[in-house]
Image (cartoon, rainbow, N blue to C red; front, side, top):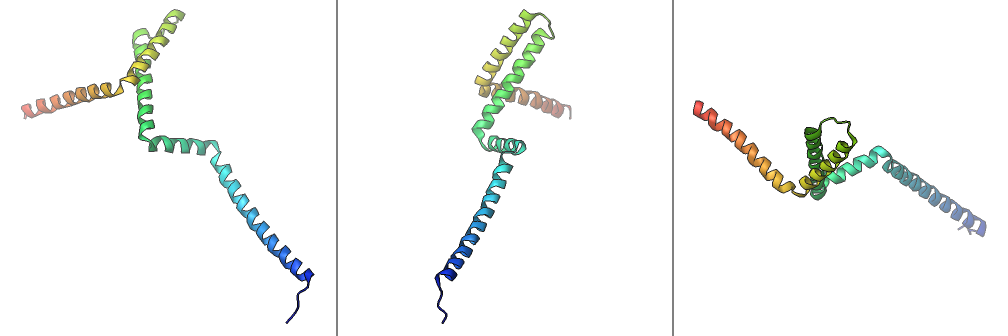
Length: 133
């Protein structure tokens, strides 16, 4: 049997530490790549979109907000049109936000009314078509 001296033991320990260092460096590079990919703007948008679509509460709130703003915008355009009067523009903006706020607060009632109107319109057409046949 060969006796190992301190130099050989030290060389073996250095080799082991270099292997550990190389492994840690590779893992660090991989983690950096993952972090770099996750902070790219397109990936941030994708992740946000996935979170929004995954959560029913956020989805309903977002839907209510979109419906509210769109009804506010449409009501402003219907009532005021394209005006150049600054007072009418301010009043139109106030009207737009008021309608948007009311719509988003009472979204369930508006959905129910919309469904009832939709059903009446299409059931009436089906009934009318059935009478014709």
